Figure (cartoon, helix red, strand yellow):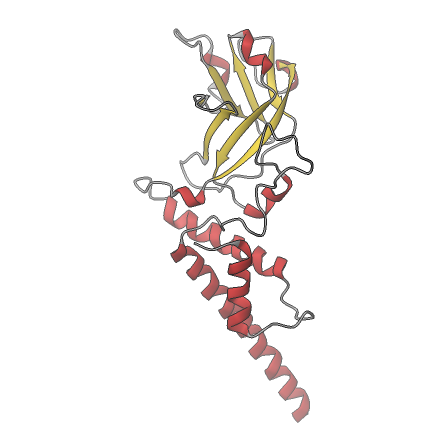
Length: 229
């Protein structure tokens, strides 16, 4: 396992690109890591028998507001629902697997809410013994919370854990619901562990280095041809 800065440095070390004006920026290298990571993880997790490694899971906090159910397009059996103020970043796209893992109150030892798909949400509260709190995701990525219990409307912030397509998108989210400090801690900083197992990081690094090396070779060939001309 390695931090975001370490995986970037690893590529630059192999390429001997240390100058401040080099064309391979940290952001570009990280962007390529994220693309390669998503590709390899899809291949890995398409096997439904494989468990999701904890290192892949990222956690963020979302604040909620109460709205009329008609405004969110989810016709559940209560007049109002809670909807996250901001949508979630896109989940990793894996066939027949839900990458949203938990939606949990910030109170220690609280149980996670039951996660249901958007198609099932309108029928959940009509079922016997459906007295819990439920979470679903609408088509725009907003988290919707609903329940027969009136107390659920007191929720202001929830902790969400998932496997995301692009880890970089979490840098604008906080990792703490009840923190009073400003600015709050980012979910994804330079010191964060990159959300991939070591062998995936190695595969990503090797492909990125190969890509940059080929670019350098093409550039050198063009310069040589130009000199010869």
